[in-house]
Image 1 (cartoon, rainbow, N blue to C red):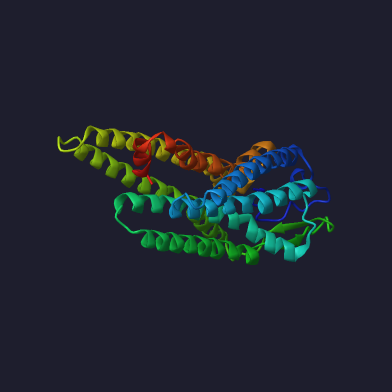
Image 2 (image 1 turned 120 degrees about the vertical axis):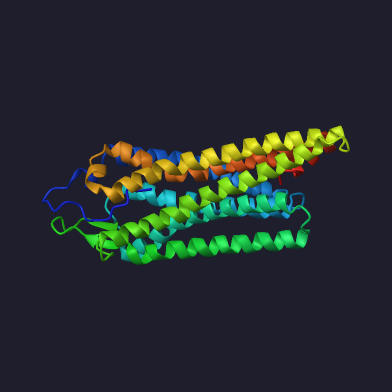
Length: 330
C-alpha cells in the first residue's frame, strides 16, 4: 500500500522528497508489477481449477476457495494497478470522486481476503469438531459465513469513502493529493479508527486462525489417542497419524504466512500513527518496502491454500487410505 498520508506535505515553495518521484516510488512500481503478475497467475489458476473440478470438490472447499481467489483478484486488478499509477504520478490526478471510490477498493479486497480466511478456518474447525453435520447444514453454514465476510468487508471499507478526499497543497497549488487530512476531530479519534481497522484486518483473523487450528489439532490428537486402543484397527492409526502430521504442517504454514505477510505492514503503520515525524525520516525505500508486504498475502494465498487442497486430490487415485486420511482434516 502507499504510505498512509494523514496530513498535507510541508508548507514550502519547493517539493519535498515525498512529493517527488524517488527511489521508493520506483521500487514500489517494480515490486507491485511483479506481485500483480504472480498474484494474477496464482489466483486465476486456482479459480480455473475450482471451476473445472467443482462437481468433484466438496461444497465447503470449492465455495470458500473460490471466494478467496476472487478477493485476491480484486486486490490484484483494482488495488495494485492503482498503487502503480499513483506511485508513477506521485500526486493525485484523478479527481475527488475517483479518490473516494478507489479509497474504498484499496481496502475492500484486503478486508474480504482476511474475512474469507477467517471463514475457511472456522469451516475447517466445524468440520472436525462436528463431523456428522449433513451436507445441507454445511452448505448453509458456508454461505452464511461468506455473506458475513462480504458484508463486513463492505462495512469496514465504506468509511474510507468519507475520510479520504482530494486536498491541494497551500503553497504548491498545482499539487493535489488523496488524503485523510483534517477529517478527524482529534488525533485520538484518528488513531482509534486506524487501530480498529488493524484489529479487523489483521488481529481478528490471526486470533481466529490460531484458535481454530489449535482446536483442530487438539481434536486430532484426541482421536489419535483413542485409536491406540486395541479395538481400533492398525490402519485407523495410520490414517490419523497422517492427518495429524498434515494438519499440524498446514496450521503452522498458514499462521506463519499470514503473520509474515501482514506484520511488517502494520509495524510501519503503527510507527506512522504514533510518531509520524520519526517514521517519515526512514529511508523511502524501506518505508515502501514495509508497506508492500500488505499485498504479498494475495500472492501467497493461492500457493498455500491451493497446495494443501489440490495436492492431495491429485494423489487420491492411489487408494482409499490416502483419501480417508485427507478427510480427517477437511
